[in-house]
Image (cartoon, rainbow, N blue to C red; front, side, top):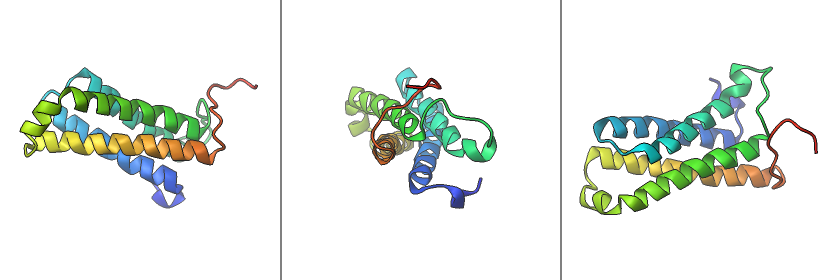
Length: 136
């Protein structure tokens, strides 16, 4: 993939999404973090696909504006990771130095970055939520 063709929002989304996917999968293999965290991993993977879609399949159109989709996917990833972190706060603080906890925290930060980046991209497009192929 050619990162030089990406906007700053796309680069941030790609790096954060890759960090969430890799750290989340490894953390789940090492210690089962549960089903809710998989929402963050799947949303991050879809974000990476969305960012690289114009390079992978130039004729394929996304089902909405890029900012709206980045906001939606980032919001899902961020909310799932934060909810799960709050649920496991006692474990996280007790085992903060364990590698699976560190990987989870990397994924948590990446998920929150996806949400913030999605918000910035959404605002950069004018702040109008556009999903679906229908005309308004």
